[in-house]
Length: 161
Image 1 (tube, rainbow, N blue to C red):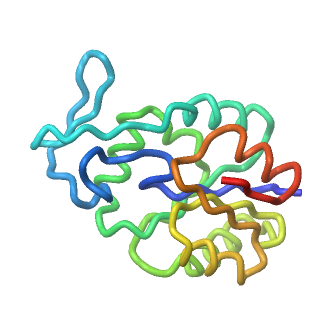
Image 2: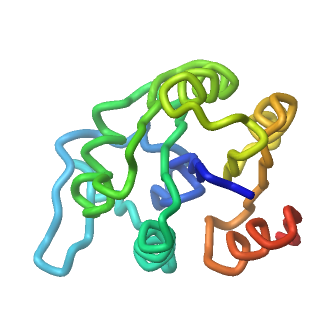
């Protein structure tokens, strides 16, 4: 049973329009009246549609939520979390370059949750493999995280994405 649910950022919680990763965005970032977030070049960053409701539901159900991102632009990632209004859902943030196993070792130390009770969502196979070798349940997502894949992982430990 998962106690700690961990999410990657780029291509898992959000996508950066024509860019692959948020570290390619050019500051300053801004948010318009409709809530759209753009960089200085007008590139729009968007949360995947189900992310806000998904995070709210998981928090309401009592799950401990965390982030693990290898981005080389932690300040941009944190600003996006604030602009989207979702940063408060996460009790722990491991946002810095490096192998995901380093992020998870830190999360394990901080939370005391064993790897076997951690659930992780990421868009990169190498990250899923790295975390899976630790004993955590790691789920590959190909088009962002959404309620059905999280529910399926919590119920069965399998991903059909």
